[in-house]
Image (tube, helix red, strand yellow):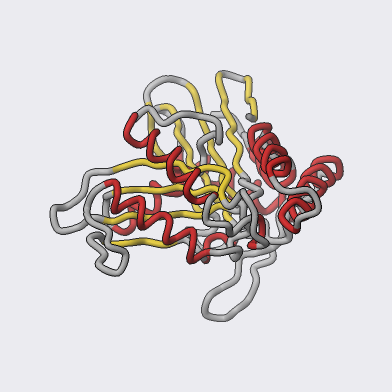
Length: 290
């Protein structure tokens, strides 16, 4: 199999320093919605300037370059062990090149590894063998600030008046947005998972953050709920960076999983305005980054 270490370094660079086109467009549209002279519009002006400077200088868009989370779908015959080794080498090299800030801290000693490499969970690697001959690697750089305001609900929730249905899900998601206020670096993107167990629900909610902001959920019920929640969250008035305004979220992305009869989890993963995600696709000898 190919040595893709340098392609993984480039994937990390692009993810850290250059926003996808749909994210830039959403931020620009959010800026235009805010009132001239308002704190919300000023915050988005600064964000858009930051986006352009990071792209021009190939510098991280934020000092917290986040946990690197890789979702790797590989063809039969490829080695997940070899791919994992290449990815970890690329993370270390990207840190040397200052595309990533050294962020991996031992929880017991408090010591920073200096390389963004920790135990087997840092960076976070998820492998799935698939049909066909195409390798797909999705990368999410998940910052600590937005990670702190993620939330998980077990329905029914009497405090919210939330039952085990989509209206109960709606109440849980809007409560998560309200509780986050400006702490997750709004306007954010929400990944929402309904069902599963506590662990699989969090993993599925983060995978939703890999979707484009302008896509449409193939499930019509979830598509309607995504649109409704986006509108309702933006009427809460939290606004960019918590300054108030018309744009609290850039989008809501939802999925559902089977669950045990005793459990009904709703998990909300919050992504900051930078929405750092990219995809590397390898077909034959032709790697491309989207």
